[in-house]
Image (cartoon, rainbow, N blue to C red; front, side):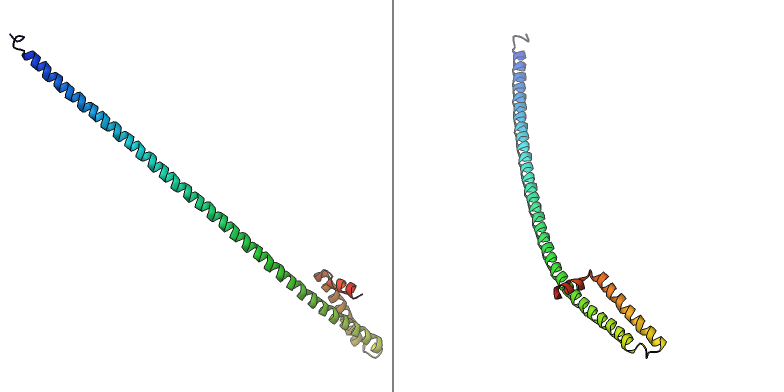
Length: 162
């Protein structure tokens, strides 16, 4: 009786329809998930490319800035070296002039002390004679000190004068 009524067939048809709709829904869900996965992967790849591009540009800018800063420092160092060489030359000229003045003054003191001893040595009291000798020795020591400190610039000027 159940077989003649086709009730079982109706149940099977409903079950097939239900399975078919579930299968279609599952296929639709898989397709949607696949599209979302592809879109998500594409979006992540795009964001990665953009982020890496930004990092590349930032790195290039930093290298450019470092290079520019290095060039500025080199220019400042060259300018400082030039200014230092000008000041060294000025200092050398000043030292030379002062050394020549000191040489002429100590030579004059030594010569005057020698003349004092030579011309008036007999008339000077013993203590005056000692003072004149001390002046003569001190001026000779000053000249030696000047030559030691100045690297003998006076000897070069003496050679030039000769």
